[in-house]
Image 1 (cartoon, one colour):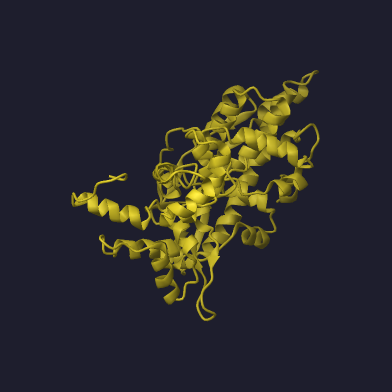
Image 2 (cartoon, rainbow, N blue to C red; image 1 turned 120 degrees about the vertical axis):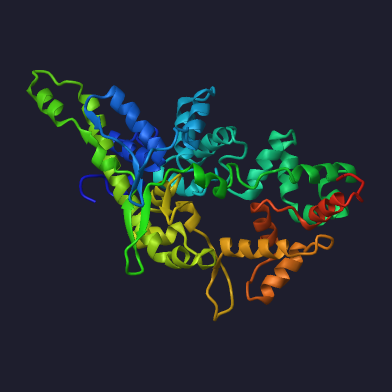
Length: 435
């Protein structure tokens, strides 16, 4: 990747001046993380202030047609950093919280362990924890959570539940799922009425801090387009020609060199860093999407049931990139193929074990199976998570009841007792605390 910082350099955050990165690295990391629409906005703002930046017409061309870009929208990261800037935080805490915001997944979760961040940045764990605490006070509620339990606990705390009780509640979601009031009463020291109120509250919580990927996909402007190459594969190209349309004002640079005193050297350096970062971003996205197109060829040509397990770590190893570089490159990005837009994060999923003679399945494929089973159930006798687990196990999918409950929650499908109550309400024959 000549002409820009290497992926190893991107991953190497120094402790100098408390995240005081060089301008080129700072620009490269920042631009790599931006969505296509946010990069359009960023380029427009820089060009309006910096005469060294020349910008052509940034449009998206897909399928041989040219389409106008989507309406500008503030990204999750920009919105969180705006919130942080309004908080009475010490400068070093603000910088760390803003840095952590850059590592958020599209759904608001924070994947990278703090210990790993500490080894990359040289920062103390305690400093990272303080920055994370600030980040987790931002909207949407639950942002910065590392696990589903932490996400739910943050939401419960926001609803007025004491932090300690919120942590205890999410530690016993399995008991809430089956309505084990006696066990919950012993574990949480709450009355059954209070427990039933908590159960109703839990059902209103969201499994992700940010809107589900399927709903967010339509809001993403794709960076990359896949088109059939006529031989069973795909041509992978950039959907928006950032590198071709964002250029340096060479005439102004030559004129500035002839001046006895340097003319706006900081703006020229900013322009050069931006152009290099955009080129690196484009090359990185092309490499990633070529790998996705190869690995997920079955899904792209045959349909959803052929989505294969694939992790960001596997992709990073295949491309000799650092996982944090992959994380930033994938965040808030999308590709378009066959008239549909998919967030890049959609193509990454862990594998569920199957029999030795059967290929592994992704969480997405298993979720589709769970959804189909629930759609076909008797509304008066809905399938429990245990029954779904048994049915899938009989089909060769090794899945625990808790995993079924987690996937069901991710699809925002209520538990069996709530589905039964909903069916009874629709027939007008239910009364009680859930009616």
